[in-house]
Image (tube, rainbow, N blue to C red; front, side, top):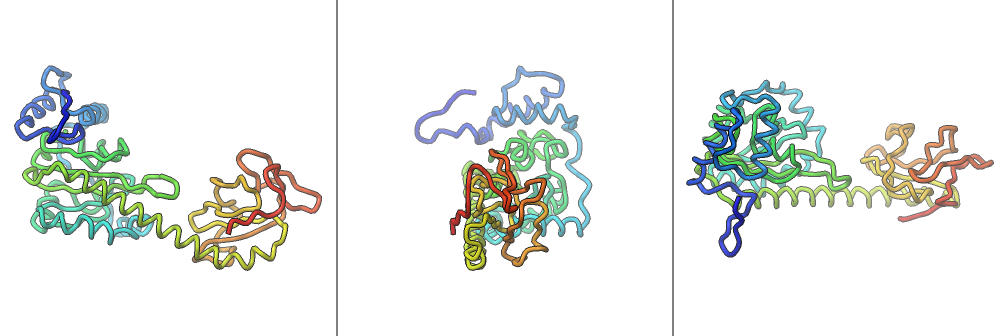
Length: 323
């Protein structure tokens, strides 16, 4: 693919102009037979087609998939923190999607559609290609598409018209970006804008990526507020421990303060659940004698039990308060 530089250049991660779509269509049609003489698509699309071919997807198949039951969809909505930032996503994308005859789609890490909102007529058309709540939009289920390809690559991607591997999706354009948990970087789901191919705009991908980053920032802010709330509750109790080793952790299970300084990055000991702690809504805090299995150990240094029964490591002695 030739490079483009200077003002008005087309970014390499955006689809080719409409005039080039015929060449992309020919390349896609030749790919199942092993042909590569036609004009190659963009590298990320080419790589996606290869993954899709290995998955056994038929370019003539329907994009339909078995839908999740309503109660399963509700369960998945409650289980993900994406629900907390849906107001941010709706404010940033849903209104624009409605005005531009597109829809906003939010999926979980398995590519299952949990929410969608946007232009009413396009919502009906989306139902015809099974872009609806509970549907699967991974590459292995629906071929190359923005949601599935973003899931596969963990990067924002835009897929336009004939770049979709399944022929039934050639009348569509879509742009998607991953949303990650700011606490540990794990993928939470995908946010996507989809619509008729005629609604394509190269700036859509940048918009979706910006709103995904805004949602991550909102989650980070909520996490910090929860930490400060827990600190205000835990501080008076922890101060009574004197020189005894201690730890405390928010509901996410990541220690924020501990007597063993090298605990950073270790998860909350399984023997301490929120049900046994005093603050089930804001997190948990606890301290205990060191058991035989030494749950107080750090990742880098082993834990030993002192004669008085408290945990100790070579990394710390006494309490370390970062309140």
